[in-house]
Length: 191
Image 1 (cartoon, rainbow, N blue to C red):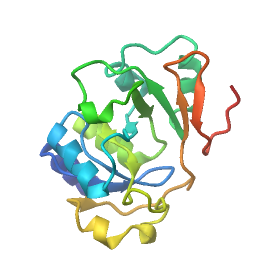
Image 2: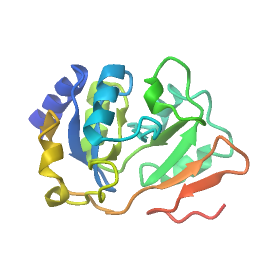
Image 3: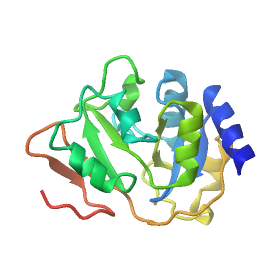
Image 4: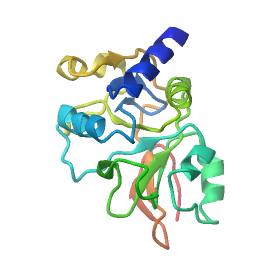
């Protein structure tokens, strides 16, 4: 596995795109600070440029380098559910991320509970896009057998593995007060 992780890191460093397992589903990603790679990923997935993708980080500490701040009342939520199936939208720092990754309100941040993406991100030193590995509008792939061969043929590396939760993450917009749940997923949270 170590060779595969290192190979993935090298591909991402050079602007490539990979498919990899996470705790929730199979993801497709590239580094978030390479605008050309991000643009290519959108085109490969046939995803509208207006739909910002979630971003995977290796730790809460790494998130802090890419957001303006983490509100005091949000940090306990992150410490409770990360690593895990919770995506939280926070205000992004300008200039550190491809504009295609930053939405109207901010950036969708998640620390996955899966060794493969965590080791890749740590090796790369930069967060990666963590959107599902499917063409836009197609079903989310929870198993390697769910991956569309047409999509896998368009990326630079497909890493085999298992997903554990097999349900999409819960998404909460924490850029507003009160917070707003944008998608009910694997984690049940009452606001």
